[in-house]
Length: 309
Image 1 (cartoon, rainbow, N blue to C red):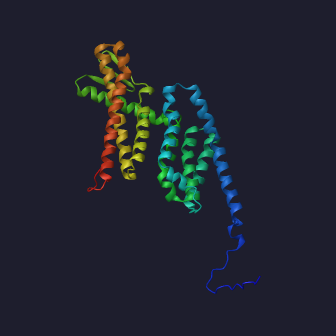
Image 2 (image 1 turned 90 degrees about the vertical axis):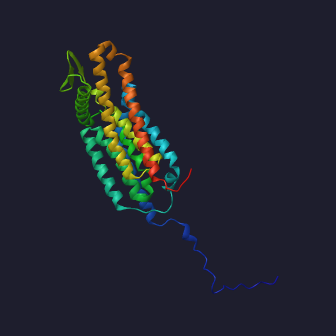
Image 3 (image 1 turned 45 degrees about the vertical axis):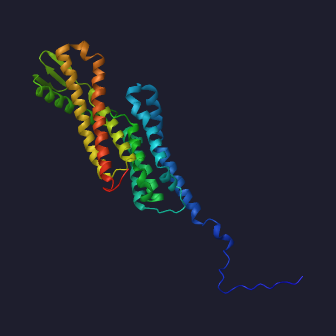
């Protein structure tokens, strides 16, 4: 058989080398570096998981309901932005040293928390570590759409626990003072002494459970979730968080004032009966509705004026 001579065309592209698909020699070292970083993050935050498991098993359900519900909220939000989650696995990397700085700072906080047996800073360092690591390895633009689900990890800790108890006391006193002012507005001669609200011969003790911290943290979670789903701007989310503080304070103070009113006019049986919790549910529901309407208004402002639905 006659052989056909082949000639390489001068403009033809040269064949790709067989080693083009092989990993570069730097990749094993890079993989080891990231493996060490992930291992350190997991090791330092392991006490948080152990503490949460113990907390959920030993505490009353009403005290840890938000803490137990938070992982499911995070999972749901990540599912809504699953395209952004998948984008984290793209081959193209855009490392940022700012992420490494944030990661190192969070690990220092975590180490301090482990050494001092303090859970609250450890819960704060957990989302910081995730944020820093992903920014370092994937770049800030890929992480930005996932910041709210990441930082919802903070709400694994109940609002009245540990260092948060100090703010809870401040909120407790403020709620008692505002409730006293509300009672005076409707003509009842009320006086506050510490955590006690006195109306005539009756006294209502505003306990730590009545501080409103649970209302505040729950509304914050709702606000972050609404902002994430409605895709609000960061500025609008910050405005909503500021409004949440006022709404939570007003709702809790109104509840305390209503209970004090019932205690004065109808006695302990009515004030401590089913209406005690019922008033709280109504106050929280009104605050929730006001927050939802506010964030819907922010969402409407983001739409183009000529758009139709």
